[in-house]
Image (cartoon, rainbow, N blue to C red; front, side, top):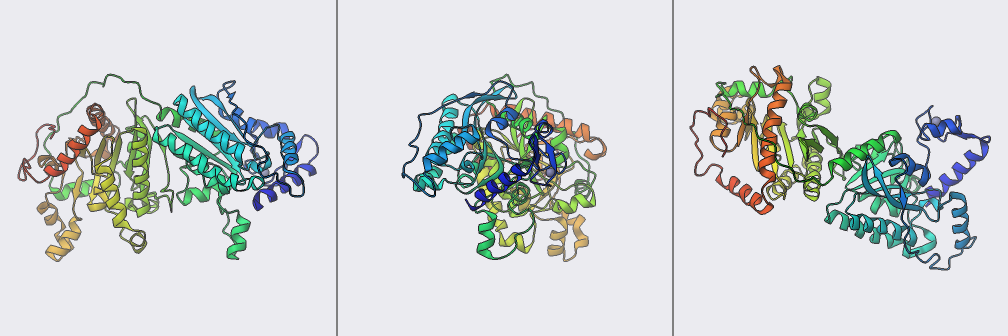
Length: 572
Ligand SMILES: [Zn+2]
């Protein structure tokens, strides 16, 4: 609450110093003509500072014109403690209502965003700092109940200093009340998106504001549990620049995205469309292209799979899929750029995609840690597997990694456990899982994304228990024997398909995927559409049973270890 009051006073002081019709920007101090500022969505044209917005202005900005219809609920007790500080609480409520034009700190209703129906709950910081007492708790859980009754997504816009002191312990328990209502939405598979605006703190940030399936921070918004002054006074040190900003949260894996005010509405429309229930449609006719036998030597396959020009996960996300919204972070520690994930659409179906990303240029490869994920990367993937299950979305993984990151910090954060958990989770995930090895499939770090119903391997890709160099160094006692090790381990798509480990080989253009990335993407898209159509027709029990059978069969009956290679695309 300290922070809330400081800001309110600060803003009041700023407003009073500006002449009528003008606003002083809290970011840069410039005097801005109010009408021009409002035309610019209340974003300072000088410094890009996003000024606070009242609930009505926010709603107008987010929804299709004229589509908002307010919902009212039975009112909660207004002053349960008969509370008086320097003034009586009912007086403060009356004054807040007069100043903000609202009856409480949150406005609830139904609306359309991008043509889709949603339930909306938008907080107003101008009403007692957006604090949550009985009435706010009642309205927010009422909004969740309405979404549940109507089977609609719930979008909340948060701005709050935290729990309302004047309602004491009743306020505190609103955290539990609203959280329970969000749990019901998750159980029902209804999308919840929380937009975190400046400021969101305390009992609101530690309840529904961060319980949305997707969290979007507005640029520059301050979001945290304890206000910066409390943190600073507790640890008696200076806080880093940008502490608790939306960008800080993104860097620490705590929100999915940070957007400017203008970008939020189109993003919401895409997210709602990607999570909309899909009407049953006839699966498209599936195309299966014959794959000519690969003549490449296993060591040549290794070299081809590692080429920096080869298309990466980010390339395929652009070319194979029709739309893709990246979702960031493990919600606990960081966002790992070596493992990208999000929600995509392909041929009219929505899916969750996870992919190891190497980058192409030296700068990109360093930034992506050469496609070697840390534990937080696998934990982000775990989180998105849960997202896929909640919303019934099939999962597609794109595998291309030398291996999981082998470093002390990865060990400290539990690399083994992160990999083990994701393998176990995907082995029983209640939606179809299709893995695609697009390049290097290095050891356990690759297998983390390979526990699947179908395993597609690009013609010049491979999966290996250890790098050929590593194998050569240990068994041949020299890394120069890597080509011999690659041959001995039979690396490459041919062996993977002959043994039934791969369910299909995806053909590449002559000379490799990098010579014609568009053709490579077309072939992958066709293969994915065919598998998605087949797997989506299965019920969950049949799917899980077949997945278990597939794992049990590997290396057992029917594995043709010495087959010379397929002549056409065959399926196990
Ligand atoms: Zn400014």
